[in-house]
Image 1 (cartoon, one colour):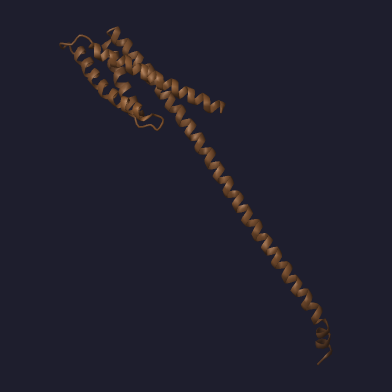
Image 2: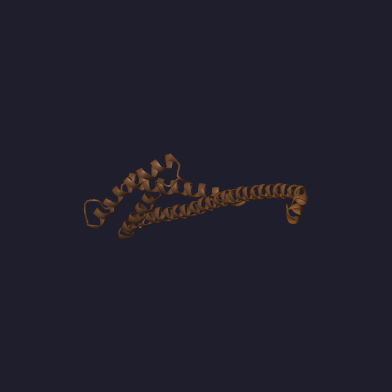
Length: 179
């Protein structure tokens, strides 16, 4: 053996010990890095889930407010329809009746409406169709000269029901704002 190999053999136990120690330290650092990465992934996932929950809540709140605005428009249209019929402004009544039917058709399936309210709105859409035909007959100079008492009652009840729905939605919005 030459002198270089002999000096290596003399250092071998020390190098082996430090090499093993370095391997263990490297393994520990790798495991710590893996644990830190896993913890960050879990933390990021929780943050993403929280952001999704907050976004869904905001979307639901905006949807409810938009729906509430539609119902408030419906109250105004129903009230305006009643008033134009009382004043015998048939052309304006036809316009309001058509707009009210379209509005009700757009909200009847909204998740903010209770099942019984949805049923009532569906019936009201049909009733408004009959009222619209009567109004068109009046403007053509047909036999009918005004709405029947039943039709006026339908308009009164629809206005009241939409007013109640509007009130319920506004109260719910206040609870959300204060909640």
